[in-house]
Image (cartoon, rainbow, N blue to C red; front, side, top):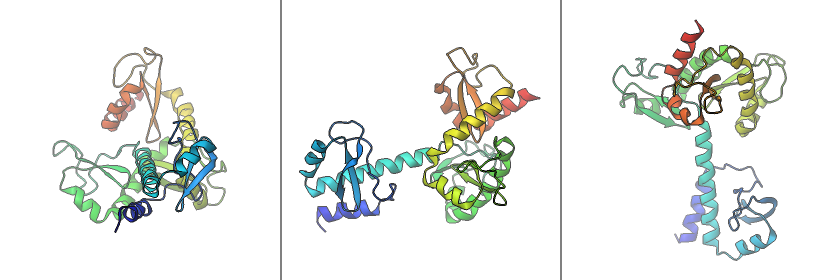
Length: 270
């Protein structure tokens, strides 16, 4: 197998992250400027976009190996971005999905990203056990996360269509990236899953509007300073709950131990 064939196989083997006809890139490989999606060149079944016809002409002068390698690189970058989006909500349950033991009861809890989702375990030995039967285990996790997050869900309309959740019967409640989303039907669920980033911001705004009115503390749960001390507050959404911080720099510590943060907020409400 020559190098070109090897690279071609690599491109085909990568997950298809763009819709048919959608360019694999958003930035022109020559100028670094945003692309014009109407100015494209084909590499096999994939489309590469450019900011102008001149750059497209330059790309067409590349040999096939270089073109295929560029497409593979862009697909890998999109895959990493998609995985990053999916894992923005941490594991929000307090027990190991295998043993049921409290996290931290056996020392520091191992964290594993599985199918783009963060999962935490009581010990490293539970990780392979989860992977052997991950579909069933994710169903168990999802049921618990739906029950956990449902009381904080801020709207009674479909996150995609805007229709009432019961407009077509029972709502479709599902977990994406450890976070609850609700649609009026499976068609809307599929539309959401095709492009989650299109629908998440509107839900975030609804959560902020709903929960900031009764947010019980005026200081940052991480930095301990006043929420407005650095021009804030910075509004962070974790599992459909609002966490107000003094700045975005405190977000990683929330993701490290979200249940501790929730406990402090809940205690202040009492």
